[in-house]
Image 1 (cartoon, rainbow, N blue to C red):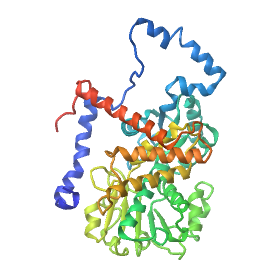
Image 2 (image 1 turned 180 degrees about the horizontal axis):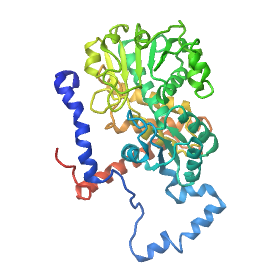
Image 3 (image 1 turned 30 degrees about the vertical axis):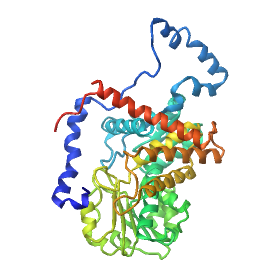
Image 4 (image 1 turned 90 degrees about the vertical axis):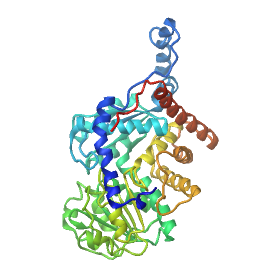
Length: 452
C-alpha cells in the first residue's frame, strides 16, 4: 500500500511514529555503533603479532613508505563523521552532545549500506579555523572525512580549506551528498513527466549548504543559470539586492548566484518565486506550513516538488498532492520518493575509498547521480518511484563503480581498478557488513528493539 492510498489521517499518524519510537530504541541500545574486531585471534601467540612485538615491523615499513598504511591498517576503509553540532537537521545549533545521535546514525548507514567503517567525531568548538586544525590533526587515522551539520556559511570555508590541505577525500554531505541525490531525483522526475531538464524552470527555496551545492551541481550538469530562481529568508535573489552585495565577502556564493541566476530579474517573496515553476526544490525551514498549498497551485502543469527539510518537510506530501503537484519527494524514509543523501554517500565513499581517490570531485558526484537515476530506471520509474530506496543494495554498488571509474578517469585515484573489480569489491564489502549484522542478530548478540 502506498502513502497516496492511505487516508490523510493515516498518513499523519504514520509520520509521527518514528519520533515516538526513537527515544526508547536509542535508550535500549545506548547508541547504534561500536568498534569490533576484524582479525582472527586463535590464541595467546596471536597477540604478539597483532600487538607488541610483531606490530613494530609494519610500523617500520610504514615509516619508510607511508602508502603502506593503506595495506596494513583499516585506514583505507575508515571515515570520520565530523560535526560541531551547529546546524543539526532542522533543529539548529544544538551542540556536539545533542548532535551525537545523528552522527552515530550516519556511521550506521555508512557501514550497513556501503560497508564503510565510520565513527563520529564531535568537536567542542564552533570556530572554523579550530575545526580545520582539529580535522587535520586526526586525518592520519582515516581514509576520508565526512563533514556533517556545520552551519552556513562557515561550512563552505571549512570544506574548501580541508579539500585543499588534505590528501584524503573530504566531503560535506549536506552539500555534495544532498546535491547528488537531488540531481538524480530531478533527472528521473522530469523523465516521468516528459520535460527537458535544460528547458525546465526551477525555484530553489533556501540558500544553505544543500541548495547552494545543488545549484552548482545542476549548472555543472548543463542547466542554464537563467532558468533558476533562488529564495532566501528575505526573498528572491537578484542583482539589485544590496544586502547580498554588502555581505559578499562573508557569503560569496549567494552573491554569485544573485548575479548569475534569475534571467527575468524577478523580485518578491517565496510565493512570487514559485509562480510558473516546473520544479520546486526546498531545503529550508522545517514545516509544516513553510510552503503554503495555495502557492503550489501556481506552478506549471505536472509540477515536481522536493521538500527536503528534516525532520518535518516544508509541506506535507499529501497537502502538496491536493494542490495539484504531480510528483512529491521528501527527505524522509517513511514516505515514497525519499530524496535524501543516505542514498548517495555510502556508495560514493565506497567507490572513492576502493580506488583510494585523493578527493571527491563534482564530476564524481554527478556520476553517482546518473548511477542512482539509472538504477531506478531499470526497475521502472513512475510518480511514486523516482529514486531507489536504502534497501536496494544494487544502487550503492552501481554508485561505487561509477564514482571509482570517474576518479580513475580524472587521474586522482591511487589504485586503478577495472569496472568488474570495483563491482566485485563493493559487493563483497557491503554483503559482509550486512551479513555480519544479521549473524549477530540471529545469535542474540544484538537484541530485537523494544516493543512499541
